[in-house]
Image 1 (cartoon, rainbow, N blue to C red):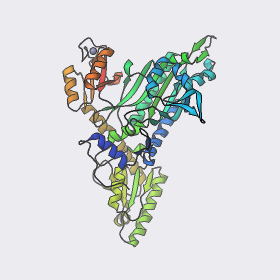
Image 2 (spheres, rainbow, N blue to C red):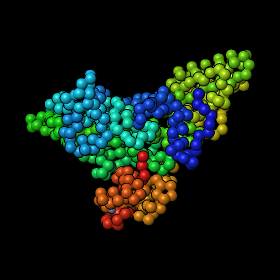
Image 3 (spheres, rainbow, N blue to C red):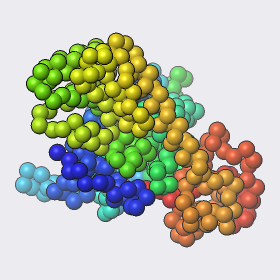
Length: 482
Ligand SMILES: [Zn+2]
C-alpha cells in the first residue's frame, strides 16, 4: 500500500514531484540495472491503452505489424555513415555468445532501420511490392548516462514504423500523415496539445532527410519531444540496396520513412496533467475509468451495499466502461479514496446505504469539484458524458496553460527575459544559421524545438533573426527541453 506522506508540490520541486507521483501511482520503479526501469502493472496498463489506440490508427493507414531481431550485426550500422555516427556513443555491443568471442560483434538495436531495410532489399523487387508499410512494437537500448523514469532510460519500449515508397512525394506524404496521426493521438487520447513542425538539421534523426516532431509543453514549462516522423529519403535504400523495377522496367531505389513514439509518452501524461495529489489520467487512457467504493458500517449494511455495488459494476462493464470494485476489507473508505486519487483514476463512485435506498451513487471527479449524486438508472450514459467532458476539459486546460506560457515575436532581450522568468515556447525569427542556433543553446540551454507548421506560425512572419538580427529565413520555436 502506498504511504500517506504528502507529495512534494510541483511549485516546490517539479522533478521531485514527478518521481513521487510515479512511485505513489506505482507506475514504475528503479531497477537493479542502472539506467533501466521496471514498468509496474499500473504503468504498463496505461501503455497498453496507448498501444491499442495507436495500433488501430496505424492499421487504418494500411500498416502491418512485424517483428525483427533484437541483435543487429555491427557492420549493418556502419553502412549509413551519418546513422552510425549518430548512434555510436549510445550502442550496447554483444561481443561474446555461448562462451565464445563472436566473429562479428552484434549491437542491441538502438533503432531498427538497418536490419529492416536489409530485409526490405530481399522482399522488394517491383513497384507492385510498394508501398511496404510495417511497424514493430519492441524494446530498444540506448546507453544513457543521465536517466529519468519514462523520459530517458537505457532500455525503453516503443513502436517503430518503417515504410518504403516509389517516390519522394509519396514518402513525404506518409511522413506527414503519421505526424498528423501522432498529433491526433496526443490531443484526442492524451489530452495533450502539441505543436508540429520540422526539426533543424542539428536535431534531425541520424540518416534522415527531414525529421518532424510533435512537441508538448510540460507543467514546468519545459518542452517534451513526444514523437518523431522521418523522411529518410534514399539514404538507407542506397546503403542497403533496396531497389525496385518501375513500370517501365527501370531499376530505382525506394524512398523510406520511419517514425516512433515510446513509453516516454507515459512521462508526458504525468507531467501534463498531474497535480499535487498525484496522477490524473485522461479517461480514454485510464486503466480503470471508474472505481466503485462501497461504504458500510454494520454487517447488514455491508450485504445491501455490496449487492448494489456489484449491480453497478455489472452495468458499467456491460456499458463498456473499464471499472474496478474496491471491496477490500479492513481499509477505510478515506484511505481508498486517497489511494485511487494518487493513481489518477478519473471517477470514483461511492455507494453507501443511503445511496442504495435512493437508487443513486455519489460521483467524485479526480479533477475536483463537488461530489454529485447520479441515479444508477442510466448511469452508463451519464458517466460517458462525464468522461467526454473531463477528456475535453483536460485538453483545454493544458492548451490554456501552454498559451499562457508561449511568447510570440521575441527579440533577444525579451527571449532572455522570458527564459529568466517561467519560460515556455518562444516564437521568433531565425536566420537559419546552425552557428547561431548553437550559440543560443550554449548561452541559454534553449533549443529550437521545431520550425512550426503553418497552423502554429505567428500571423506576421518575423523579419529578423531574434538572436543575431540578420534577416530571418523562417520562424522557430525555442524552449528548454527534456
Ligand atoms: Zn541568427
